[in-house]
Length: 329
Image (cartoon, rainbow, N blue to C red; front, side, top):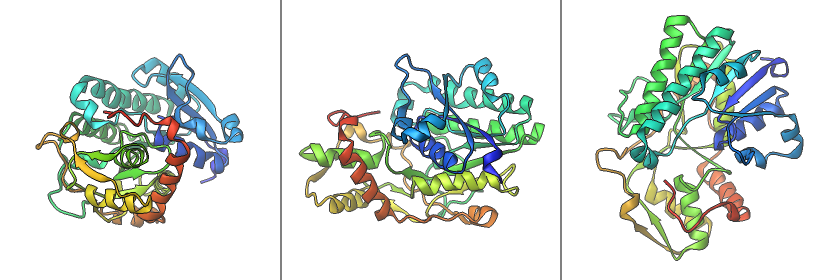
């Protein structure tokens, strides 16, 4: 694919993965439009971390994915869409489930309908490994049953099925990318790795939820390359494709490794408010990435430790960006 000839729209561009994806697309010479959620503060979110040259090259638009008319206007003239706009915090979904339906399901519908009308070349829709729920078997392939164990995961299952329906009903060229747990610089403290690091830097002890759940962690630059490879491949249209390392680590093991990297000996304690409801907790997520390798040639490059070292460095230099004394939902 000649990316220099492509006009690309990235929704959720101010988010963690979205900002890294914009950066990678700009490096390929694409004409990138970055869609952000409107804020009267004109806040560009994580795009603020991009170089001044990259920021100048971006076309930044602010609005709401839930507004179908707004979305339709932004899709005009676009060749490829990377759809990352979503509410993603699991704890907050217990409190405000309707918000997740409106943003994740209705917002996705708005985007797909606009893409259909404008005959967009390809839509890369972002899913999550949380749609699988607790594993029936591992490693988890794309045929694994889906289970909505939180309002968040249920909303993402709904969005995924809407995307599938647009491929089957209208032949919209859409591919669903299903990343397992992504981590890296710029991630918010609602995620486990920044939670551990910020507390290690500022608190007397490390307060976490359950330590037993196992997660498959992929570094964000590996994941952004997966987005790009899925867009480039003609074999991916109509498919759902897992992206992960294929290796699992428990939260307790992860915390211990981070503290070792930081040369920190602080105590880890389980705090009740951070523990998910028993039937909602996803116990085991380990990715089968065979399909991604077969269809696109993608495989992860970064090791867990390499990625963690970069995140520790980033947070140490940007600690002022984090509210270290609060538990973020």
